[in-house]
Image (tube, rainbow, N blue to C red):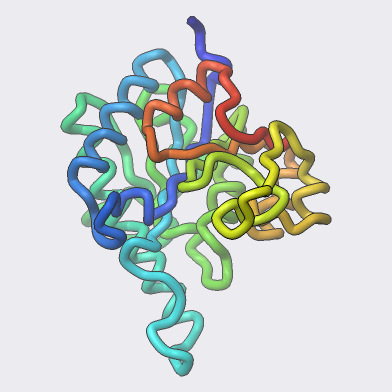
Length: 234
């Protein structure tokens, strides 16, 4: 079966790398993910990845911490995850490049849009670190921005929930999952897919979003082949 998409931007939460531990990096989870993404790249799909840092750092350590300092620490946490994911992918046989929005030459290439696209065209898996490089922006917004910049066919938001619901399914047993929803509905109904900035950026640049569970990493391949295992925002 041929893939449904030529180029995707995959957003992975930092928490998903923690596995059952809840924090840090679970080695088994990391390598399962690396094997799956490499397998998908071998099918001809060009893959860019934005990974969060919530398994190491989320928000401020205290109410008094400066917001900009806290966000910079979060960006560094994403770099740890990006390097770990790159290593797992390389062990699986993939060729990767880590591109950072904050310059750190010894461990990552600086983010340059045309360079990122060239890496993708050569079949390399490109991992974007440090979010947008600016405080006050989430990694969801970074993913929406990079998806727009590399002209991805779709943005995959791989989460711990299997789609978009009308209310929190963990609190309300009668929560209803949407198969499809529009960007405007996400914004107007505050559906919690991602922050408003990221959702508006995807809407304005006509980037569809697929929201699905990453508890089984194989879902990434199934979604890339055209199955809808979650919710499509378009």
